[in-house]
Length: 203
Image (cartoon, rainbow, N blue to C red; front, side, top):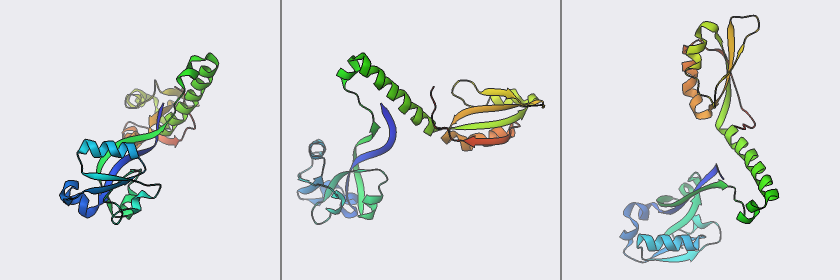
């Protein structure tokens, strides 16, 4: 299960001078430093580079320029690379936080049930992080117009307002869609908008 949380990239990076000139422009054998020995060796071979791999054990970004020409390391924001005057020259792979299960454990009904339950809980948290709950009131005459533009997981929850000719609508919308959705909701008569963050969502 890919949670899509904490995404990182494994990249090759070099000092600005080397990065902008190109790795082959050095005219000599390059030194590549990395903790990822097999991955880096494969990258060197695939790119046809004349390079020697030096195994690092942490703080790989400090190797250039004295101890290495290029590094292969993981990065999330690129801030550490920038702070050390390095530019990304290639991306080897991407990754994120994932859940893996032993195939033999999945064959055991007792273990399978526990694993499936864990997956349900984790998925509910991941789904909740991607969405917000939007609550909005609307007059009865404009209910259908407003519902038509509201994205939701299945159908919106609609309930009548107490003592009024209006309705309250509740939907779980994608967090990224909210800024563009609010003006549309207001234009179609939506009032009293309330946005909350759910803890878990089980579809």
